[in-house]
Image (tube, rainbow, N blue to C red; front, side, top):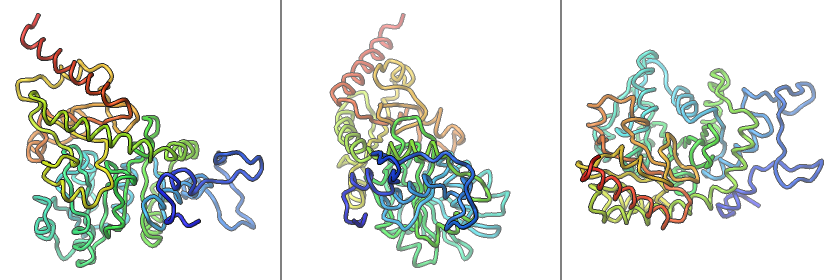
Length: 390
């Protein structure tokens, strides 16, 4: 059956699996070899060439999930981002970048691009005029991330695709926060879709990986640089990632439901200054999100009222863990100023609206009543401690 006719959970489970012809096992066998025959074979396989049996098979699954022709796996999300951008940029070229992106990507651009003679401009906002204003005669790429990290701002993908095609640019997106379950950018005209597969694709906080999906023509160009940079993924991790993706649809949908409920609860809480979640009707970009997403993700951020100590609040949580990453089945929370955006200067964080009291909450699959109870007891504990300090 053609993958574009299958439901998303069926694609997650079956597309790209390797059939165990020898023992008829129910799951893909793991091929650990780093050395393959080169005579009388159709494909000369080598791990750094991204074409071992497990690498190749999982690439087909991710391509199907993102409605693209081909996909590749990388050793990390940043390996995927850096290889993809450098594959389409060289000295003298220019790239337009959305103003709010993952801190690691921002740091890569501002620290490394000057060494290559690559010019860049960050947009002042998210409108069509904001992006068009930054395009130059030497612009080659337009790069966005939506929902954005950590403020959950939404960029209109159809608009980005239209601008890119009108100006002969390659459009790229970091689709990590949405996952292929909630958003398929290629359907809105985006050329290249990038993921930190560490997050929703891995989903269990035990895998570090990246993924890129696009047309075969674009993927050939990325592969040509990728084999030289050497950022491929080990086959054991590829095999673990395939295992995880099989449940991605059911995991993400459960996280979506929890996050929407908790965002609504936080939005009414007297100790919360503001909630950032595109599923809320009062979110600035709710209508855009409603149009281009199939769910609003399990990610949200919120600011406590200024008098409440954010660090003390996190330490008072019991079920919800303070943790660096996101998108696992367990709920986690962190301070972006201390983690994901710590490399940005205080001035740049302020420009992006990332306050010290902002908390990023990755909602897991636990029962939502238990998560709400944990949040409530933390609010009570911190309030009591501040009113009656020892």
